[in-house]
Image (cartoon, rainbow over the protein chains, first blue to last red):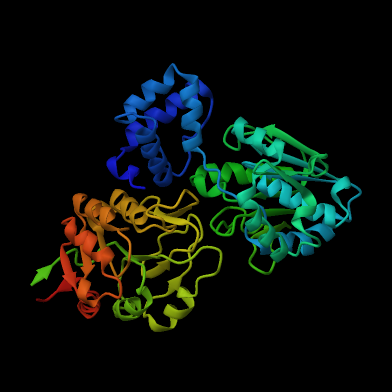
Length: 276
Length: 195
């Protein structure tokens, strides 16, 4: 795949494109990390059949369906169920027991993409007897993703990998207990999403909507620049109760942020933090 | 004597099959007073921890470190890209990681690192492309040269897998073609090459 090799995109034309996206469609990518965003825009230009950034910008301005296609390039939806199994093991062993001390609790999966992480967390909560006491907010900026997430349908080819990770994460039965397979798909039990609220929410432009006991936000902040990371972390910090939890991606850290001293990292290196 | 970018602010290194053997020769040659930042991408399988940092750290004069997202580009440090993510130079101050699709069948991809290095540091980059069995890095080398940077490619006859350096050479993207020992001496001399 060498599409991106065709273009060097300068900052000014990228800015103009992102300004148009924001004014026409209210999606704010202006503070996304530029290095990777430029590569994805270059790929979008080639695959959507444009010659340059300006062409793409004019193309989307009067053409909402085309913008929907561009949106798939601007955002990244790569996830698997129980991705980084030890993250979910830490959740089960360290976070869930603390959540169990509340009569009911709320979990926010920010940037839930197609729902892989939501179903993974829900399965852990179910196995620990805590699902019925939970409310899970699953948010994303991409409505198509939210629809997929809400459907709980994943291609059956992916499920073998999910099952293996589920077991490595300390799963107590078999992942196949949670889905029915048919027509090339695995359809996950709707019991898992009985307490899940799927909602459109942007960490770039929206504000806090609830107090929560834990936030799980994995491989979302890597796409943000320092300022936008600070905004997102401020939202999380406002939302998380005292002694609540924040879980990040395996290479995301609070270390380079203002929040380094107000959270303690749970030992084990799985990027679960507890608010002090 | 060719003297280039005497103290590059950024050195980017890409390697694949046979990487470790060569990195063990080159990285320890970088002197402790080197003022630039070194970023290394090696094609390693996803889903399990990489041992590169543990293996290389005891051998090197400079500290060798893993990368977390938005890691500041600390001078005098060798950073090693984690498996499963692309590593990019976000700007003159920090690194960034991404989960975007593999490129050239690889994540991390050498092209992704090299392209972003060219963009952020222009002519203050030295790129080193080592042994490997894909063509990842050739495009990145071309881009680094186009931005005024300098590229060193491992002499294919010294490679366990010569495909990668050969692709860069055939593309006309190599300023120097050197053996691992000569690359080591280039760094030992602070970025000078003696013919």
